[in-house]
Length: 329
Figure 1: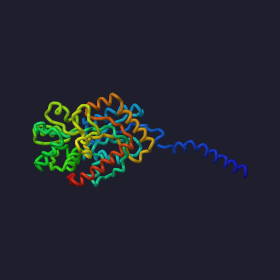
Figure 2: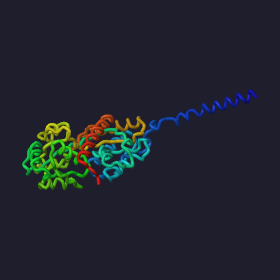
Figure 3: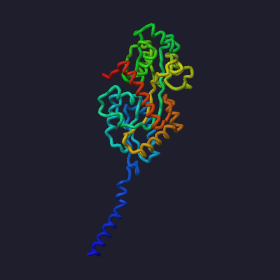
Figure 4: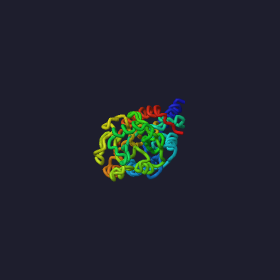
């Protein structure tokens, strides 16, 4: 009997030892063999825009670094919340990412009943900054932001400014200017930027905050005049246009920033690899050159730096939304 018991004990022990490698493999973190399939990058807006161009420029470079195909998927609608909802419901396994735009820190402030919370996402990197310029018609005869503010104060409620829609960063940037300068301008939302530019040139609008790519040719041709730049320093392309801080309004920020985010529960090693892959890709010289041509400045920040900027933007926009009573109908 003792021999049999010892044999059974030995066999059981041997079986346990043989099973250890399989158990160890089962306990391996999911990041150990990641990525093992294509990675999906969800775009919150349609094809052809600056963000879409950025995502498709970076996809093959990130794919090269990670050894798996990176597929861009456009999921436009509802100020980016269609894409955000899709990513929030995806598994936190590193195979679903999301590009973010200027609406990222704003949307939850304007839409309190979203089917997700912003805690569902973790920012990986702010990839680019899209500076904007406060522009006026050249026919207005105004040459500085101080002159514009003085003229607007003399005509309360009679001048208007255009934006690309209620709740956009440029709309809220316009409201910041109104608050800080103490002027009364009527807001006119548009569906397309070319219509804003046309009305600005014709003098039907007295002011708008526009992206560099949208307005550079009209500044060069003299049809509109740039009075202030939303950036930390002057751009070499427009050395005579001061920043908002230089013009006396350091709180005003209306840039179009693009970044990359992922589900918060994604394992830290996967997040780190993706962050590094995108930061490396966006800093490639040929990418920097191409993005400069479409009015984007490469930054490629760390996740922590991006999170800090988003928190600052959310605090700034919360106050503007409250004071201006901005609502999405």
